[in-house]
Amino acid sequence: MLNNGYNSCGREPRTGYRVRIQTYNNIGEVRMKRTNRAALIGLLLFPALCLAHGPSRQKVVEKIDINAPPNKVWNLISNFCSISKWDPEITACTSDKGTTPNSIRTITLKNGAKVQEQLVRIFPDKHVYQYMMVKPNPKAFPINTHGSKITVADNGKGGSTVTWWGAFYRSYPGPTPPPELSDAAGRKAISALYRAGLEHLKELAEKH
Image (cartoon, rainbow, N blue to C red; front, side, top):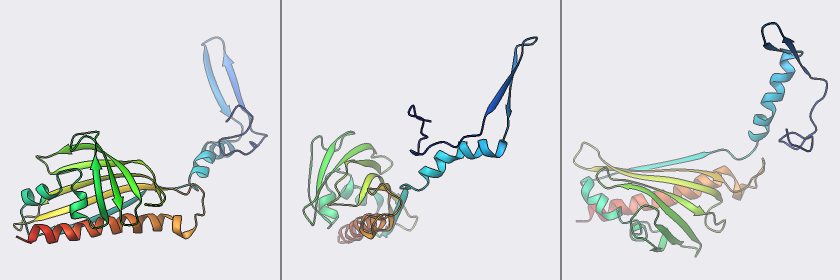
């Protein structure tokens, strides 16, 4: 409930529901009785129902098998700003601190849009790094947040499996976004970025 008398969804609260508190002074016990159990449960659930109509967390996972050992594949992607060399959707990349945690890279997409991303953590011995988008750019992707992880693992066949995970919320805050700002549009854009990068990485790693 907000101080102005409205609930968290901006609507006037329903009236007619009250909670009676009966005090037993002899034992200091306070008991609460609900005069309308179903109504109170509804009031508790009401904010959650309102939030359910907003953006929901979306996930994208792309993976590819590469006929090259994990160390070789990892060496191609381990530099935080090498992404412009193995993902054709990215034409340029600069970073302020190289490949150290909290480093910020600025990537430039084919359409000229720029996105800043921060390296959260990296585990060279496990062939894993995680990063997140610092600031959304609607000209790049129709999303408001983006967290991602890339791993390189031995596939047990003499090669590697590279997996690129991502999670995001769409940029449009309302319940009925236009098609170009929908969850599906966000998934399509991120999936295209991941898929193009993995396919080109496979070509590079298997070239020699």
